[in-house]
Length: 220
Image (cartoon, rainbow, N blue to C red; front, top):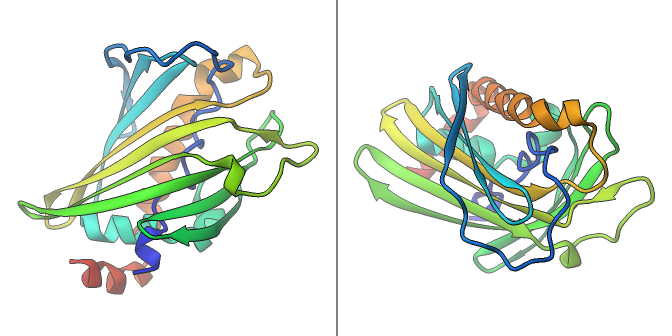
């Protein structure tokens, strides 16, 4: 029960260092999703929102949805396989949610950190279970800002895991963030796509670790 709430927050900024500064205007209705690219088995989309834009990535993973969920719930291991993840820890659990802190250390820019609250749900569907986790920024519940680390003020996103076969999952990832600070143009233009593909590659590799099989069976 406790581990299932370690929903998948540690990669939420892995490919999202390209957001512009947050706007102060009220949130407008998001624009339409626009196709960006399809490479390495990951289809990328983008839509305009108030602060910057929101990214969406869809890719298949060769494992059951329960197994992928078990792997993504393994917060303690994120620093060993998730791209750019320097620190990742649970702050507290509250009923149906989890609060967690993460620090991101990516090339060429200052470290970023943030605290998020993650909520998780699942439901039985044809072929198994689908899993949905959604997070939003809750910096007030985490550690204070640190010198030399840029505090991310906006970091909302989600994972949806849908079974498409006994050992196959369609994973849909979304991220909407203001990464803070000044980002060089060449990083802004390419960082998101590279980071998200790296994240999917890491997940596809990590899900092969046999330690997740037992927990996946318990979730089915």
